[in-house]
Image 1 (cartoon, one colour):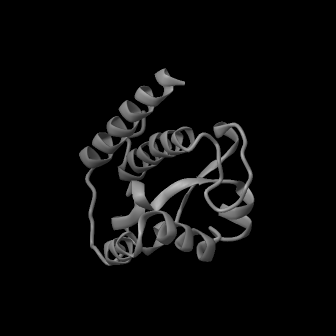
Image 2 (spheres, rainbow, N blue to C red):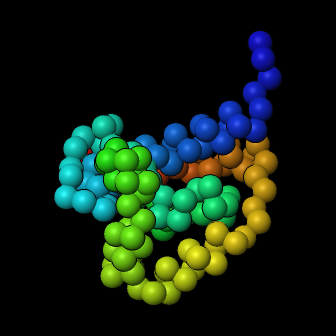
Length: 129
C-alpha cells in the first residue's frame, strides 16, 4: 500500500470544506441566480486559491458557485468581490486581500484537523435540514 502524502490530506480537507460550503449555502450560487442541489454545485474562492494557502480554507473566501461562474467565468471575481463588499463590508475585503499575502505551510495534521472541523460543521447543518 502506498504511503499517503501531504497532497492526499489536502484534497480530503478540501472535499470536506467543499461539501460543507455547498450545503451551508443550500446550493445557491453566490455570484448568479442559479440554485441547484448542493451536490451539483462547487465551492469557489473569491481570492483564487492559487494566490496562497492563507485564503485556501478561509470560510469568508469560499462560497457555493455554479460550474459556469466558478470554471467558465474563472470565479466571476468582479461580481464575487463586490458581493462580499456589499454583504460583509470593505473590512472583510481588506482582510482577504491581506490574508492572500500570508505565508502558510500546512502539515498533514493541519489537514486532518481542517477535515475534521468541516466534517463536524457539515454534520451540524445536515441534521437541521
